[in-house]
Image (cartoon, rainbow, N blue to C red; front, side, top):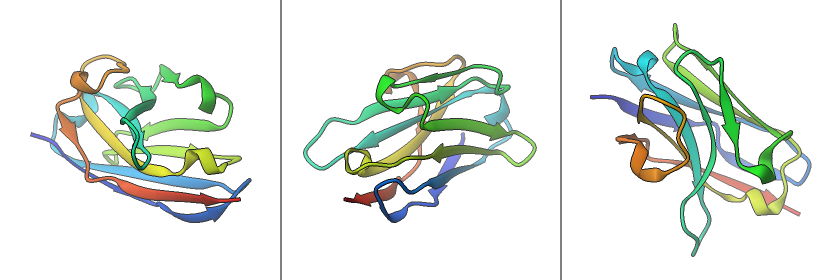
Length: 123
């Protein structure tokens, strides 16, 4: 069992940066890939990016490539989502998820989810 808690969301202006954190409990966390997803009001939850168990591999949604970076510190059981050059289209609730042994883009690949953190980008 893994419990995830996201933090770091907030209200920012277009062009600003935010760093989200995903803190995990559970000794198997370091064995799993971690994915970040987001859900805007009235929209489906969408994949943002994912990082492999050891941090060596990442994969991103095309629209965030070059702006968002995922990293992890397994000693701290924490994964980060650094978001730069934010724009209003990035406004959403951001979720981290784990439980997949490999990088995956599909929601069903992840067994454990956090409660989400709100990111709002004003123009």
